[in-house]
Length: 385
Image (tube, rainbow, N blue to C red; front, side):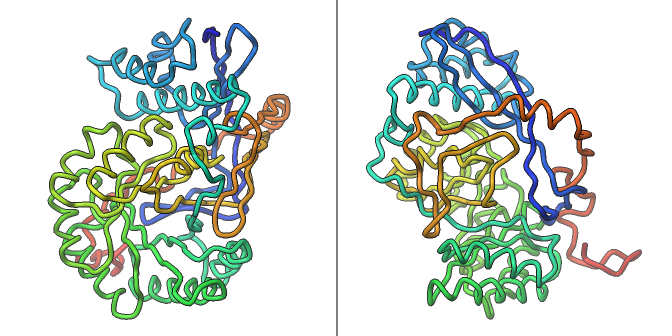
């Protein structure tokens, strides 16, 4: 079996609500979802999910190769872009190809990927994460009631602008999840919007009444000294890593003992997750995947000994994708369909896409001008936002 080509599709996910974080809110309730399909000479096709704009730079490393050699091909892709670098968009392309290669490997064995990787249990513990900063309090409760109905006992809220608003919302979600646990786990995500002093002040204020399991990305992702400083100043654990690309970017954080929960972005691929999980395990640290449509890292998470919990952002799938998973009992129940268990209805995607204008470029992926500078109110508005 040889990799012979690829094709790329863009579908979208309808959230049914606005999503965002401390950096901004998406202007529409729909977001793009990129799908990469690898072709082989024997007719099998592998599916990878995630932005892969640089796929042309990377594809030559796997073209004509047997996809079952996925671990070797991962290093080949890294080596292929050695001089120009493998971070950012290029690492996303490597991740999407890697995901599709793993899908092919499991399909060739006619088994679900969690079996191929070596998991014994198809259940993956999860936490609810609604990307919820744009919701009012009533809508927030309604959203997490849907998660509670699926058995969830843990949730992560977005925030970071108004400590009293965030406290109120955390307490409301705690009450909702209280139907499933006497001590639901609450996490809080500031998305790199604070500086060190602000992070400690804000979290310390929340911790007067709320028991936080972890605080995610309180300062910039690469700020090892800053993350360590925050970690020493609060009771909650510090989580980070979703936006780091490559093992080398984690090394300063691990050496500085700046992180308690090692996170991995789903869009960076399955091999990256497996390697980082091993590095974290060597330091007795848990690992937690950050979600992307289809929960593709769940297959790998089921197989590693230090998986803590996986982020689950929604209870439905993007247009044209059918995913063999069930969200139940507070986590992901993986199915038996070979590979990742993702079926792609390309005709539906293409037909629907022709009727849908591209979304505007705005929202939480654009860093606001005053991020990290909110120690005093803006003199023009009187607000800390």
